[in-house]
Length: 342
Image (cartoon, rainbow, N blue to C red; front, side, top):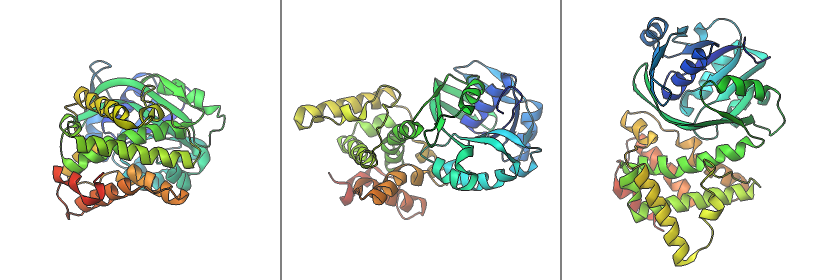
C-alpha cells in the first residue's frame, strides 16, 4: 500500500527530480535518490540538495546513490525523472526493485507512459503532467522558477485507489490533481512542447525572438493543427493547456480575423516568456540528444497509425535528427526549408 511509510525512490537529480526528492523528503517521507555521479551522491548525503525559488531557500540531505542497482530493498513509489532518452534503460534496471504493488510515476516530457508500460506493466505506470518550472544552476543547486500543479492518472483511465495516496505524497511538492483521462492532459502539454521546444531547437532563438517571426508563428499553428487532427482521429478530447489555452477555440474560425487573433495570442505568449530558451535547444548545445521522438515524433507515429498526414511534424523531426547527427546547423534559416513553407 502507498502511504506515509512508503519507500520512495527518485531517479534523476536534475531540476524536476531533485526538487521533487527534496520537497517529498522535507515532508517527512523515506526518499532515496539516484543522481548518476558519485561525487553528487556524496554531496547530497552530506550537505544536501539546495533548493531556492518559489518554495523558499533550503537544503535537504537524503540517501543518494549513483546507480539504480546500488539501491537497497523494494521501492513502493518511484518518480522517474530522467530525460525521455534515458528512461527505458532506467525502467529495465528498476524492475528488480519493484514489488507487485509498486508504482512508477513518469515525470518526462512527452507521452512516454505506453513505452514504459511495455517494460514495467501497465498496472505499475502512473501518468503525470508536471505543470511547473525549474532549472538546475549547477549539480545540487536547483531553483523552482514557477509554481503550478501536478496532474496524475491511471494510463488506462480506470478508477485507481492508489492515486489518492500518491496525491498525498505529491502534495508536499505542489497541489496534485487526479485526472480521469490523463492521456488528454499529457497530450495537451505535449502540443505546447511540440510547438515551442522543437521550433526553438531548430532556430536557436529565445522564445521572444522566435515568436516575433511570422513564419515561426505560422509553424506553431501548423504543428498544433496536425496534433489536434491526430487527436480527433483517435477520439481523444484534448484538455485546455494549463486550464486556459483551449486548442479547439484557438484553432476555430478561419479567415483574416481568425488568423490575426491567433498570431496576436502567440506574439503575446512570446513576449511574456521572451527570455526562455528551448530545453531541446539546450540539449543540442550540450551535445546531447533531444526528446523529439517523444514530442513531435509521438504525433507523427500516431498519425501514421491512424492514417492522418502530419507533414510539418514529420519534417521537424527529420531536421532535429539531422542537427543531432551534425548534418544541419541550428539556424533561423531552417524555417525557410521547403517542406515547412506554408
